Every structure is written in C-alpha cells, then in structure tokens.
Image (tube, rainbow, N blue to C red; front, side, top):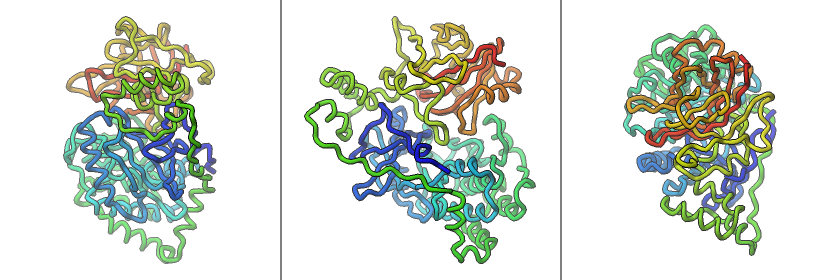
Length: 532
C-alpha cells in the first residue's frame, strides 16, 4: 500500500509556493530535467508541475528545443497519456503542467508486489502501445520510455514525459548523435548514437514489458557500459519470460529496427491473447489489483489572506519573469528590504542551481546526510564557494540524521582544482585527495582516483553501507578508478572504496558538466572508516 506520505512530500524552504498562478501543494519528486510538484487547476483538478533545472534553462539551445518539443507535446491526445495542459517555455525557470495521474509508477508497483501476471503485462503492453501511437502521431519520439515513465492508474497505464526528454539533450537536436535515455531500456541504435525512429520506442516497450514480467531489467544489472554492450552485441535470454509473452517481445527486440513489430501489431497481438477479457471489462479490475489502495491526493492550497507583512507578501506572490541578468539584483534587494526570511524564500529564484540538491525519480526524497538547512544556505554562485580563491571546506550539516557510524559532509563542492579525501581533511584545496573531477575536451567528465574504486547505482535506490560493500567487492582493477559521469544525474548515488578500506557514499545533489570550464559537482558524502 502506498501511503500519502510516500507519494506527497512537503514543500521545502527552497521550493517556490507559486508557479505562474499554480499554488504548489506538495513535492512529487525530481528527475533529470527538474523538480515535479502537485498543484491544481482553478477548477480543482490535480496537475503535475515540472520546473526545468536552472542549468538547462540558462542554455539558449535547450530553450529552443524545449519550445519545439512542448509545442509537439501539446498535440498529443490519447487515452493512455498524461496530457500537457499548460506551459511557459520562456519562464524563469521554464515549466510545464500535465494532468496528474493518481497511481504508482510501474517501478513502484513491481517493487511492492513483484513480477506482474501475464494478463496484466498484456494489458500493459496494449495500453502503452496505444499511448505511443498518439505520441508518434504528433511527430514525437519518446526516446526515454522506461518503467518509471509509466504510471498505473486504476483504469490502465499512462505514459508520461513523452517528447520532452529529447529537449534535455544538450549536444544535438538532430535524429543522430544523441544518447538521451536510460541505459537499461535503450535500443541498440540509441546506445551507439544512431538514427532514432518510432521503432526505438518499440524496443523500449518490450524491455519495459519484460521488466514487468521478470521484476528486473531484461539485460541484467550492472554499470551502464556493460549493460549497453549487452544490448548492442548480445541476444537477450527470453527463456526466463513466461512462454505466452516470448513471441511478441522477441519481435519487438529485433536488432534491425525495420524488423520490429509495429505498435498496431502489438495492440492486435495483445487483444487476441487476452481473448474475451479484452471486451469484458477485465482491464480496470486488473489495474485496481496492481495499483492497490489509492493515496489521498492533497486538496488545493487556499489563497492566503492579504497581509501587511512585506516578507509574507513577497514569498506568496506568483513568480515574476525576471531576466537572468536581474537575478543577483533581486536577491540583494530582497535581503535588504525583507531580511533573512525573504532571502531564504527567493534563493530558489536566484541561486537554486548551485546550492540545492534535488531527487531523481524513484529515489528517496533526501540524500544521505543532506538537510534542509544545508540546502537552503548554499550560495548562488556558478562556482564552488571560495575564500581567498580556494574552495571552502564544508561542515557537517546541523541536525542531520546520517547512517549509523558515518562521517557526514553536506554539501561539498568538487571541481577541477580541488579534490576529496575519505580521510580528514576531506575537502582538499589541491589534487592530492582520493577523488578528483576531470573534464577533458574529448571525453565526458569523470571521477578519477589513484587510490579508490567507484561503482554507480542504477536502480534508483539510495546506497547503504551493506549495498556498497557488496558492489565494491567485485570492483577490482584500473577500470574502476575512472568513472564516467555521462549516465549520472542529480540524485545519483556512487559507492567509493579506498586502499585503506574506507567506504563512502557520494550522492550527487547538483551536476554541472555542460560548461566544461566551470564544471563542478555538489555532493553529500557519507564515509565509514575501515568498513570494507
């Protein structure tokens, strides 16, 4: 059973109370493109508001792509999609609103109850295929279909984030040369930067259905390069799938996109296998069993009574579209006229990008060691805070509740001039620590070490000491001393072990590697001494 507290997180000090007239009622989560909130239309209908991450919003090329994709998404109308109902691509930051779907993601449903029955997987494939038909009819390819982008309402699945994921690709808007997506659910042509077509989504549909039937990714777990190698070069083991599903999933997983089943064929195949149930109303009963009791959706936030208090008035006022060049002036004026309380409220507008963490989809609401206090006081700067030209050593977050026995630092800033160590001093002003950030001109930014090994978690879970011990036990050799950050994003957890047997969990709060000359990571860091 999903409780209300699991689904709806309270707003934090760095969250805006209002977005363009939409009063925010709760946090729903965050992903690669930004934070997601619950709000309501004027008529009281729940909607999901997504705010774009500032480092993306500040890129003119991203805004152009985002504008094109939002216009395409407006045309998508389907029974199994969460429709886009409002957006402002020129806002500061840009945002969009879709209908809120009251149900768990496929990831959450499988984690709660395990693999789904064959009939449910067939209903799932038929519904998602219909959703993709509507998306493709609007001239959009989803490119990031995965279990966390399929929500399960009590009357069937809903596909979300259609057509928006392409806008987050900062390298190209063309059909080639892009690797937007999630490694475990990519198609072969996507993994190698080939041409992206509607057949790419068909491959992801089959992987998503296999995940529902198996309770785990079809191509197995592991680091991104290993999984992508399997997808491109190896045949998947379909013998683990229930026999009724194998023919259709095999067809959809054909290496040649031209040989894959069409979405219309997927729908017809599923309806034939479901036989009379498809027309007897069995679908809704299936989904109610899978989704479980529905969490109570918080009601609309009432409009506050006008107050003479200047600080309260500023905090509750809908955000104005300040030009980027005026953000610093806005922060300064707020601090002078309304004091520390107002500064905390407007920090989201002026400095959210570089001082605040956000949660990735399907991960806990907070990263290890991070607290509201630590996030809300980070400085609005495009580089880590400095004192005399050197990064400032962070202190343990007050009132934190770290994992037992761990030394906690949050937030810490890592760039190409400093380094981190698993021993004191943990933040080094030179490159002598255990962990360095390197961004070479011809390669992705990566974490590097002469003394430590890295392993990244790809299952959307927060890392624990026991999980890191297990994962790091097999991390042997120089291949694990350099770790590409291409598949890492805000909310990603990495396990680290040095030669002394110290183990650490690094949780990425902010990743800025788009502009190589100012690349940095904001992290929370839990360290267990002699834990290996």
